Image (cartoon, rainbow, N blue to C red; front, top):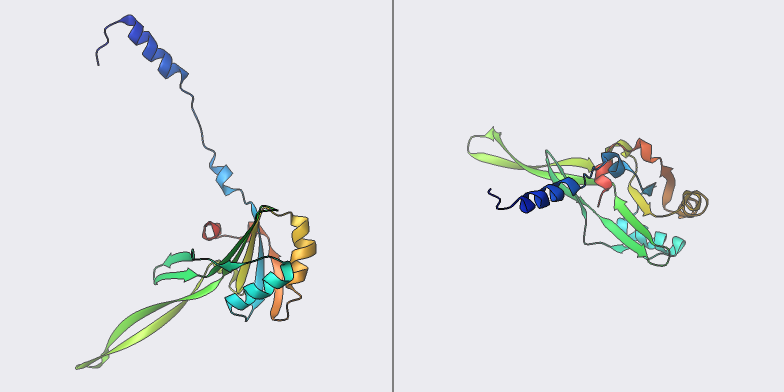
Length: 180
C-alpha cells in the first residue's frame, strides 16, 4: 500500500486509533431468564395443554417449531405448545420431556437365506437429569412469587396431574436443550 501524502497517513492513523475494542463476556449468556415447572402426568400433550389453558386462562397452541435433539442413536423431536401474552409480555412453553428414537436393524444370525428386520427403540429425554418428569412448563418474564403462589398450586389442582413442582435452574445440567 502506497500513500501519496502525509495527510493520508495521519488520517489512517486516526481511524485505527479510534477503533473501540469490544469484549463479550460469555457469562452473560449463561444467565437464566426463565422459570421451569416439572409436570408428572399420563395425559397426552394436547389434553394437558387444554387443561392448563382452562386453569391458567392462557391459550397454549401447538407450535410447528418442535424441539429437535440429536443423539448417537438418531434424532427425535419433542412436541411444544406455545403462547405469548402480549399484555404481560410473558412467554409460555409446554414441552414434552420424553420421546423415542427408533432404529431399523437387520439380523443375519437367524438363517443364511433370510434377514430379520428389527426396530430398536431408545428413550430420549429433553432434560435427562429429570427422567421422571413427563412435561415442562417454561415461563419467561414472570415473577418468581407469582409462580410459587399462583401457577404451581393451580397446576396441582388438575385431576390428571400427579404433581407439578418448580425446578431450580441450578439443577439443570442440559440447559442448552432449553434454548429455542
